[in-house]
Structures are given as C-alpha cells and as structure tokens.
Image 1 (cartoon, rainbow, N blue to C red):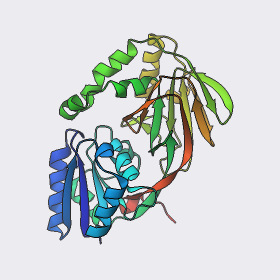
Image 2 (cartoon, helix red, strand yellow; image 1 turned 180 degrees about the horizontal axis):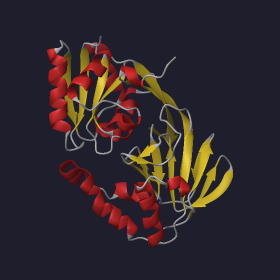
Image 3 (spheres, rainbow, N blue to C red; image 1 turned 30 degrees about the vertical axis):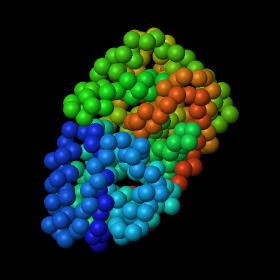
Image 4 (cartoon, rainbow, N blue to C red; image 1 turned 135 degrees about the vertical axis):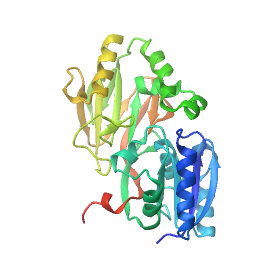
Length: 299
C-alpha cells in the first residue's frame, strides 16, 4: 500500500479540478496516507527532471500524482524521465482526459484513492516528436493550429467551450497540402494525426482496434482541400466513422514519420509543440502508470 504522495496540480486543468482533487486528497488522508501538494501553472516549464528526482528521492514519496489532463501527465512523465524511480498516478481533471478514457481510469474520489493506494502498475510505451516525448498523439496542421490559438485562461474558466473560437479560426483558412514520409513511403495530407490511442479529443474514436498499451503507432492522413471538406472530416470524427470516410487514409508506422515542410503547427497530447519540420518516431522510454486492478491486462 502506497502511503506518501507528491501531488502536482495543474492550475489550468479542467473545470472539475478543485472539487475532485479535494475529495481525493481527503479520502487518501482518511485512509492514513500523506499528501504533499505542489500547484504549478505550466508544469513542463516549471519543474526540471533533476529537481523532481531530488524531491522524490529525499522525501521518500511512493508515487507522484498528476491532477490534470493529458498534457499534465505527459509533462510529468517527461520530468520524471525514462528511468522514473516511482510510478505516476492520475486524478483525471483535464479537459479531454483521453488517457483516462482509454485505460479507463476511475473518476469518483473513493475509486481514485483506492487506485492510488493499491492499484497495480503498467508501462505505456512512448514516442517522440522531435525531442519532445508523447504517449497519446501528435497532430500536424489543423489541430496544431487550434492548440496554437487556444487561450489557456479561457480553457481554465469555460473548459471545452474555449476550443470553439480557435477551431472556427482554423476552419477559416484553406487547407494546406504538405508532403509526408511514413517509413520511407511518400504521401500527402492537409492534416496529420499520429496516434497511439484509439480515442481523440476526449470520447471520439479515431482508430478502432488500437490501444494506448500497444507498442505501435497509427497515422491518419486527412486530405481535405476545401473548408467544406474539412467540416465533413470533422463530422466524421464526431460520428466515429473516420475510417469509412473516402479521402482519409490510415497507415501503420513501424519506424518514423517525416514532415519536411516548414511552419506547420504541431500539438502533442493536447499541448502546443512548435512547428515543422519534424520527425515523429517510436521509441521513447515507457511511462510507469498506476491503474485500477481491473485495468491491468492478464499476465
């Protein structure tokens, strides 16, 4: 049973964050655990790997808990590094919570506390977009533009509604074709999503038959050439039939994805990640994650 937790709380995570986090902390303390809370805005910029390693080692924590969404989890996994001394726990209070939906992770305080105290660990293999690790997806083009224009303060205040304006702004631009090389094969797209998860942007299904625990990556190439065609693609995503829409192609990536064109916005696990050119590749050290007993695969 884990007894000491370092809780890293993302100050710009989803609307439910305060209440659920308070309830989970209260439940942990009621069951005899010690919780040290560190509130951060912009986890990736405010906590170095060396600093976090010292805190975990010298204070004897049994786990580091991310209270936030997919971007918070990614930033924490990056800060802990590939040889993390302790596992990561999650209180899923982000906006999309793709990882929590995919596994799935509990969302009720008592169940979250039980998972953190006694849940088993699994490993989730990662990938890289340039030098940045990710564990769910990387997007180039349309969704990268949305994330690039997202107001984080508005996201903190109104949640998913904050995505409406940047989505409309991205739709106002004509899709821009760019060359893509997947494992040496030359292709073209106007929007690319490289995913390790079946889900996308919360509960939408992007690719069937894929799970974040799999050590594989699938590339979805969207081909819209007009705004109307892009709207049709988004409708297909919303209705969970992306794989059946003509003009969208899906490819398994065995090694790498290369986009040489400059200036295309990139997002990874829902956070801004600069612009192309970029190489996306499999092979980032695994993330150790605490899950509920029922989510651990049979051995």
